[in-house]
Image: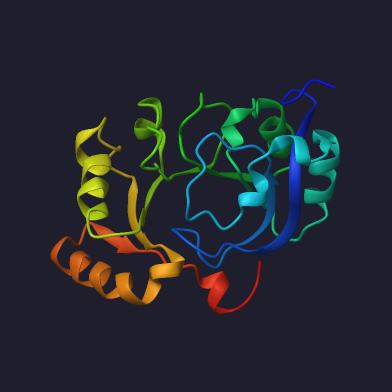
Length: 206
């Protein structure tokens, strides 16, 4: 089977609520793809990085499982999903009336037909310019004070996100207590931004 066209290395699939960003609280079927070309030190799913450790799963089977879920919404995350061509996965989801939401660092060529694209650029590998024009959401993880300047750089100076893109600042989980107050004050001074919290960790769900 051809990876991307017929199958994908899948770490896990599960039904839960989106815990962060614009779609916080939305019920969705999560498809976590194995393989990552970024490798952030703060990543909480490092086990997804090595694609060879995850079984190649037929796209048809993924879609069949998603069809059984009451919420007709799928979040494709990783790892980095854009390491693979997602046209077939998205097309099959669309044919079955399922919304497709993408979470990506934007570091590989964009593919697939998405209802929502959450772009989360990382410090150690640049996002491709094509993502800024189509992103519905820009989610910047804040690990230290310098990340506020980096967030503005991505929002305003790279290729400029489109005018409808929602802007989020999210504290790195391990520094939540120290960074959240700084983010609150920053947003009060720069109200184009919103805060994103990892709610799923507070309420102890996946």
